Length: 271
Image 1 (cartoon, one colour):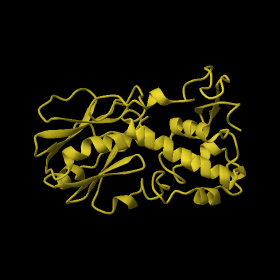
Image 2 (cartoon, one colour):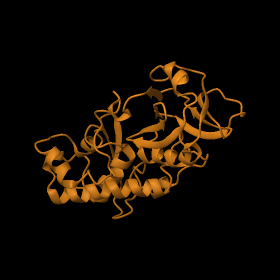
Image 3 (cartoon, one colour):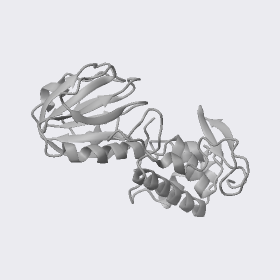
């Protein structure tokens, strides 16, 4: 599944091609994604001008002069900038055709993605209004997380993956952040001291920043907007490395299941 760094990589890839362009057509080949695509999208967004491309959590916000197109890539979605004459393939569900002659094409083999249209504030949209803090913004601090975690028995990995607390810390990046901070994934969130929260907050920001800089993590269902895979997978320290030696201490890395997700960690380095 594309996580925050992959979505941010997509945003940066498509932004220069979209801003200040007029939408000349919107082609919807399949309305039945995770949620049906509204017919209002084509009626109201066509002929509008794109002003900005933003990201909120794992949602892309394409701001236009008439409203906002909200895109979620789901499990297997990806975006491409193509010549608008390039024939669509089986899983190419939506094209946003631009006055430049290019088109933004959404491909989604599993159809778990979504495309919404709103003429209101997109941050108040049903799918966005309850989202937590952005991990790379100054508002996410160790002090705030410490306060939110008090008296919480929930495992720290599940806590930092809760999108109502902090967005974008998906499974891969949660594993990597906890390793960097030296915290066991089963540690109750409410048991972490302020000092350990400071380490973890710094680790989350560091891991996500590096992943964005390197183009996201290479997953079989995701490639960057220019068609090239991300490179962060080469830097993974624990995720997907069960049974291999820890790069820090040499101990054999372990895997457990938390909330139906695989968790990778080092029992020596993480307490």
